[in-house]
Image (tube, rainbow, N blue to C red; front, side):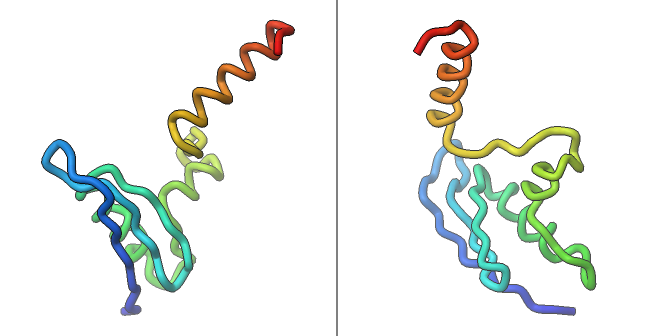
Amino acid sequence: MTRETFLVQVLNWQNATWQGTINWIERQETQPFRSLLEMIKLMDSALEDEGERREWPGERAEKGEYGRRAKTGSKREREKKARRTKLSDEGGN
């Protein structure tokens, strides 16, 4: 069994749960989480496939394994991009 190290940064506490980021030290990767359960699932997914290349669930989604692309950027950034796309489709600026 390999040992993995995670650094958890709790940024907020809403709806009786934590929100923040989790940093996988050995892989030097960071993922946000919206609940304590989601944080635990991220850690579990990193440890479940011993011997294989482990990855965060978001990486699998980006590769199309789940049939959808993972969300990237903040909600505000995604909304701005959607507005720009809509304007360019309409021929505006």
